[in-house]
Image (cartoon, rainbow, N blue to C red; front, side, top):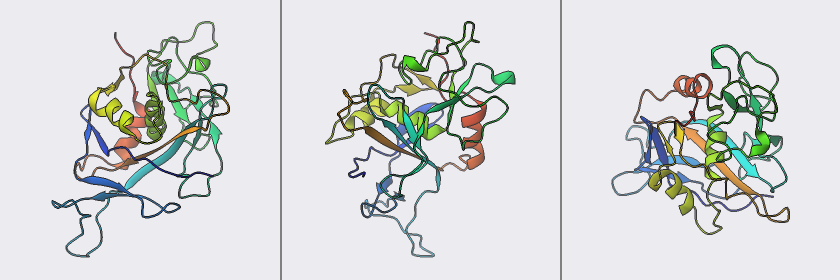
Length: 247
């Protein structure tokens, strides 16, 4: 049973920078129902289309929920909204290792993800000593190979990566301000680089604590025609969403 929701601010990632998407509001009419990313008018009210009279909202691209269950278990993911769907099919987080010119790139996936040429997904990263470990993935996901290729970043399902990022600060049961600060004030994800080398603090401290679950939704940007399903898919599967840090 899932209950309660503490939304963060709506954010936009453009030209390598995260900013607040002013004029947009995450709205869930009732617990157990679907939520919408609404456009607001100049008075702060939900905007309507002058021709149809219907509310204006952004088109959803993809949804994932990311759960840290306890310190002894791997990350769990599902491509659903637990507050709106009869959630089933939680999976252990898996890593796909693409071949060819993307050798060494780790892509976070589920069994239903649009993986390219490569072997079956596994529970360890593709390259050695990634700069985003343990910041985004615990060291239990390190490569067991004797001579793995050089790590070339982290890609794959974008909402999963955002959920992993959101687990970085210690959770607050009354506010999501730590998430806002992570992205907007501290700029921890900038120019495709993750700038926090510390292990995540959002995991439950013990196996008896409740899981920490983040719902991550990605939408097409109504104010940026270049933001299409095709361009987002290219970003996820052809490039590192998180590149290796040069520091």
